[in-house]
Amino acid sequence: MDIKNLINGEWCVQSGKETFDIINPCDGQTVEGSFKNSTNDDVDAAVAAAKKAFKTWSQLPVAKRCRILFHCKELLENNLERIAEYLVKENGKTMAEAEGELRRGIEVVEFAAGMPSLMKGDIVEGIAANVDGLIIREPLGVVTGACPFNFPAMIPLWMFPVAIACGNTFVLKPSEKCPISATMIAEIFRQGGLPEGVLNVVQGGGETFKALVSHEDVQAVSFVGSTPVAKSVWHSGTTLNKRVQSLGGAKNHIIIMPDADSEQTVKAIIGSSFGCAGARCMASSVLVLVGDADKLLDDIIQAAKNIKLGNGLDVNTQMGPVISAAHKKRVEDYIQIGFNEGAEVLLDGRGVTVKGYEKGSFVGPTLLGKVTSEMRVAKEEIFGPVLSVMRCDTLQQAIDIANTSEFGNGASIFTDSGSSARQFRVGIQVGMVGINVGVPAPMAFFSFGGRKNSLFGDLRAFGPDAVEFYTMKKTVVERWFGNVKTGSIWSK
Ligand code: NAD
Image (cartoon, rainbow, N blue to C red; front, side, top):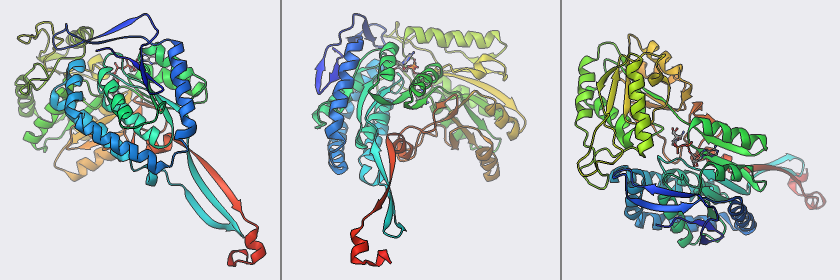
């Protein structure tokens, strides 16, 4: 598949020389798509198209903008399986994971389609004699967004539907590792009747996004990716006085109390730590066991051993490969680092092969025991199916362990005790908290985001925070002299 730029409603070939090939991570061979990088000229053209479209799009009544979004949502639903299949091919996740990802993204389109109520302003009539005070929300202008490889379809949908529903126009830069599903989604919105220039797509890597962030006609920047890049995007954007929301990496803790329901807890840990091959910013990657939990740990190891690896398009597959051979090496290196630091390899996912996919980037579920706070496997984001296991005696010690992390995306507790759950909810320093929930990702009508090095900026992705982020407020103080002359009751 030829992966192109979408500029002013037309698909066009990038003018760069560098070629990006999208290799299927399951067989390590099939080229699922290719594209050339975008140059500064391509970036300029996309931003110019978005700037031009902003003039009319921002003036279109919000209800009309949302009617187009409704139609696009329907088209997305009708094409869900087709897009999910490409998502599996470019990313390696299972079909169920790909369909789930798309459904979560579509929920954001549903949320955005409610924009007529969401972007309502405020009014206080009669703040003085014949004087009214109003707050109006207005769109910002051209917004850009860049996405990571792990949710290459859902994260674009976190960004542009809310932005355009508010009246902005958008330049999207998909992940260069997985651009196919995002590009297909953009085509759906083009077919769904989005006017030319409202949504533009520019393909490329970090240099392309840097050019977008620093472009003088770009007003705001949405970013999701690793912490070092999130920090630098936030720094560049805010230095240029732009609005930036920049979501970074994670290291999420899951605390198990002795009174937790063991069957449900094991199920939730397996899903949270090994779902999407551990490449989720909400994956639990550190398990903190409070008190004696040997039996539970044995059950987790057993369940992890039984996970069936394979091609995500096979319905029996429970876990696909990691994104690339380079990422497989990175994950395997971390397992070795853990071992060298004194961790016990309770289950080793290195060196696994899957019949028929011998060149695939598979890493099996891995558990590292006897992990301590100072080890790199306790602190750093691995982004693979590796679960570090720590132990302590009290809930407060477990909360303290989690709170030492430089990240603050999510954390969960499994317990049957309301007071333990409350102690955890109050004491834990993360943005998203789970109580007997392995992946506490908020629904589209809340907002998504962490703390510390997991989020730069004040406002989180989608939900009400996104409406706040993609609009600016104007206050109006209004007086009409006619009422004074006619002696209306308000003039008295
Ligand atoms: P990445 O940071 O390598 O890339 C993300 C995006 O940034 C890509 O579009 C890439 O082209 C662009 N980019 C790369 N270098 C850049 C630079 N110097 N300047 C500007 N843009 C640049 O991340 P990834 O490997 O694709 O994704 C995995 C990471 O994303 C993990 O760390 C994961 O935790 C994080 N993530 C976070 C969330 C969240 O909500 N907090 C969600 C999903 C993924």
